[in-house]
Amino acid sequence: MSCGHSDESTETASQRRVLRIALALNATMFIVGVVAGLVGQSSSLIADALDMLADASAYAIALGAIGRSTRFKAGAATLSGSLLLLLGVLVLLDVGRRALFGSEPESLVMMAVALLSLIVNATVLRMLGRYREGEVHLRATWIFTRVDVIANVGVMLSGLVVLLTGSRFPDLIVGSAIGVYVVKEAFEILSEAREARAGENCCDDH
Image (cartoon, rainbow, N blue to C red; front, side, top):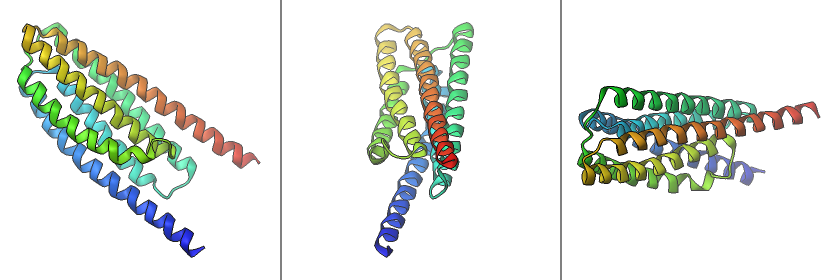
């Protein structure tokens, strides 16, 4: 019994350590990304930075859910999914605003910051890989990070196309794609949270 308890405590400590590192990295990259996106007038960079903020929030929520009941963890995942959904909508609104009022994205800034973000997110994704099939609140953090990696690659490619063509539209297109993909992943997290909550209610009934 004591060994089992020790193993569980070690696993919990490991989860907290990983999430704290991921939280610190994403919070830092959010600040870097927003500043770079504003300076570089890039919708895709701003979308990517806001995604980092959502990730940092999801990691903080997951930290609070460790060691709690399945119902609480499902609630934490629901909160994370709702945050991601709001983010996706805000990204799409910002892209629409820039499409109407114009922008001049800086391709080199886009590619440099996206590459740095990709390195950070790939590192975090590898750290969270062990939780990809785990409890719903931890799986939500893995999904968030997977979204980021895909978004980073998209921003890098759009920066390259902007550099080669001088057109701002690749930035707007990628920003829109990130927004749509974020919304899709948000619904996936919310669906898994509902299933986890339904499973818990079923167990309570029996």
